[in-house]
Length: 177
View (spheres, rainbow, N blue to C red):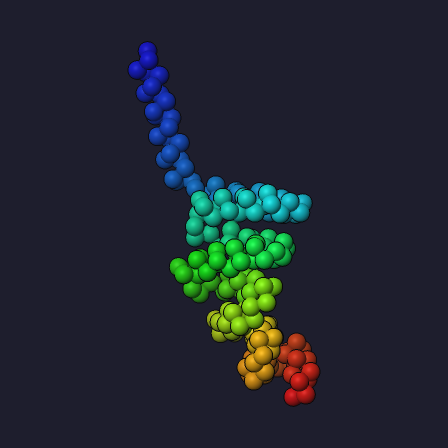
């Protein structure tokens, strides 16, 4: 009888382990959904925990990294922003063309006052996406880092992509160009 009970426990443990391996992506997605629910309620700490668990279960989850960036930007603490830039950097090592995570990291760099790094990421996103908004962001980051010439080039490129793009046109007019 003891032998049968141990066999059942062993079978249950093996079944749970196999199910975990097979469904960890779905479990991670469920944690993200739960985190989103908590985020709506402004429970940033609890949401951050769910997103971190989702990322632990599924290290390639762009959604989890993106949500963690959002939480860091909402918290606006140096600690959370630095942790997020490190996390995004780690993710980008294996996904170097992920525009969303690059833009998220750039925003975190902006909040940290690291305008050169923000410029580098925004410029890369702009090239990947051909989005005038990203060129405009790159221009402002370049301007904040003291590189007016590069800022003008980025805003000009935004206008080449979208003639009359107001944010870029306004930025250039502020410089008298």
